[in-house]
Image 1 (cartoon, rainbow, N blue to C red):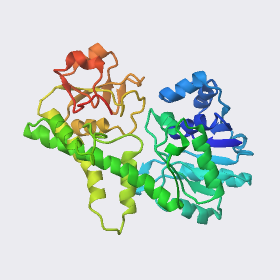
Image 2 (image 1 turned 45 degrees about the horizontal axis):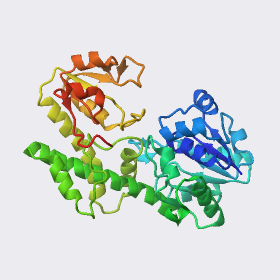
Image 3 (image 1 turned 90 degrees about the horizontal axis):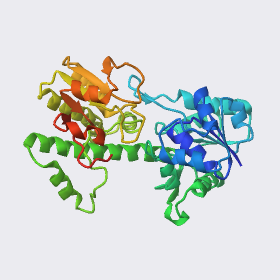
Image 4 (image 1 turned 135 degrees about the vertical axis):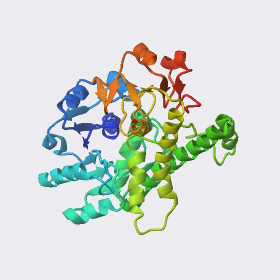
Length: 390
């Protein structure tokens, strides 16, 4: 069948690649350079599995700038456009999602829209009412940056926000493209609003876990205790385990910061303490990191990589940027080493992409994640990374 995917970020491109193994897929984007790269089988994002599939797999995938070409005769239109969180309105900005919905409606085509973008709880039902439509379903994604296709190939679960034949068919398409045994992929059908809640509560729990181990690390650092021993002792309890336990400068990236804030906004007029604490804990952790740097009285702080995760080219909402903002308030001279940046300045800080020059100029090097490139200056490095993994 023909399937259209609107948006070619981590979610959209990984789904387009997954589904184009067995279907004709048109990927819509507004950036000509990305469209050209995809059609030339060059991944516009850093993802090892996408790069490998582009190189070695036969994919029926076409990228286009023309929404009519993409949507015409498509049985499913998957919407995976960005929904950034607006701190002023305390709400996701769903403008791009609604733009795609309106384009589909204007074409008067027989299709089912699948929202993969993260949205507020209750959004899909409101959209149905707003536009007088019923051909739209929410299906959350559970992907990691840099491992998006891998997580589609080996899904932890598939959730679709409708109990219907078309929902079952869409779930089958996701399973068909995966490399995991069907029996090992849990599939859950539920109403749209519950599916929306699953996404926000899942990511907020992950943010809670990150914050918990970060606060454990803050306590150990201030008290002069061995963080690693404590974490590993705690993790031996099988109910707790050893996942999501590596201290960092805070949770960040595209999903967790905005999803926790959106869930908190959804709690308006609903009793809570924990959700708000998770949001506040992230800022508190960045403040602690900044304080520990300031205690060293450096003249120049070097920031080694802005990226959120190892082997990623994305630094959108990375936690280290929050630490930078706090240090700037103390008039600290900050330089940044980030090879994905071509600019000479980022957020009023100098970019120094000669690594040796960067090391020499820095009194303290701030590194959210350790890499071999800075092993020769460990005496300068400040990190909370215990396991050299995300």
